[in-house]
Length: 329
Length: 248
Image (cartoon, rainbow over all chains, first blue to last red):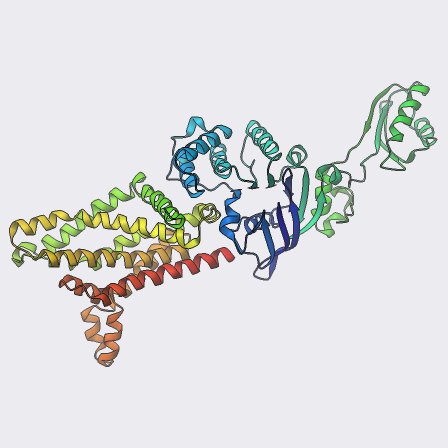
């Protein structure tokens, strides 16, 4: 388990990381979200022991990163932002170097290097010099370095940055699979990635945690979460509204679209947690003989939640920036 | 093998490999040997001296190293900072000082190798006359120690900046100060204003003063302590600089 408590990092007078605490257990994949400059990388650099925090504590498994850094680092794998590599080495040479520093020798080292090469699809470039590689290969070479010693804890700073869609997919499934046995923290800008890979998500903004929960919990913060969209052809909007109002589970009804005799309404449930509304609406539609094109439960949009909780307050007020979402952390 | 020694060995091996996979090593060695030859033969009139010694050869080393050693040392840490690999290296289970010592030793050995390749000089004087090979050995030892001192200074300046050029210039200036402090014309000039105690104090921090002892064939523990102390001081300061860089 990685346990971070009250972590603070000052850069000059700026609080880059301001009192962050969280834990990640084995079997968890924690997605670290936040706008640029929110403190994601700084937090990860502190967890991996690259920069010391100004205050707070970091425990990696049974070791304290601040008092016992070498043993804590042995259990960690780290992919830094932008995947730095020694440009004067071959991929094979680089991985051997990293494996040696990880304490792997002889046959163990060979095995570890080859399995990392296989996992990261690097076979075709192992004897190539690092500075002749494309960005995708460089990224994977650095990623391979982080999993060489099969660490219990993995810290990945934007692991899919610069990869093409196929490679992104590969890396995501890799992270998901490894997440079953390890504790993984990874940062990203890509929200779908979070939905696809993470078991839990933390959003940080200006150095503080502003949201912490599973991706579906975060999506549920969206005001449209749980509302039902219905699109019907052969009725007028007024008629549709009147009928829907009679449903016991329906609260507010909003018009979405009304064009060419096709009406779309959004119906909000009285109780977000119960699914009664959808059933009632389906029954009503069948009874009334509506030709409906769509009956769909909205499960919230992470991008709008993300925007709403990370935009400065002044910007948040304007309607076009999305709904106002209040967050309780 | 002890874990620390292993880590130092691994880091040094990588650093050494880095010299030889790029043209740096070959260019450096060739230029070093050519310049050493040019300084010794045409400039010092090696043959006209009619001496069975390598004085003409060693005399120039403190000036020769002034530009060549910073060229070797300038990339040690600045390159790590520029590429961002310092983050990779220092989040591995190695301590800062292991990394510093490993990198320093690799470069020092490399300089030692370049110096060793001047062995035809030794053969030449032995063929032409009967030199005191003990004195020649002392000269080589002193030269190697002096190269290490220059290198430690370069190591320090390369930790200060991510630009190799800035690192090189700073290092040349600092090394020049270390040479000039014991340069006789400067000391003569200073003697007009200061007492001999001050002059001696200034001269005692000069690599030239300490290296000249070795050239005469004298291995004084004080001189060895001076060079090793200078190396230790610079590497220690490098550690402080890197730590403060990480602390932001």
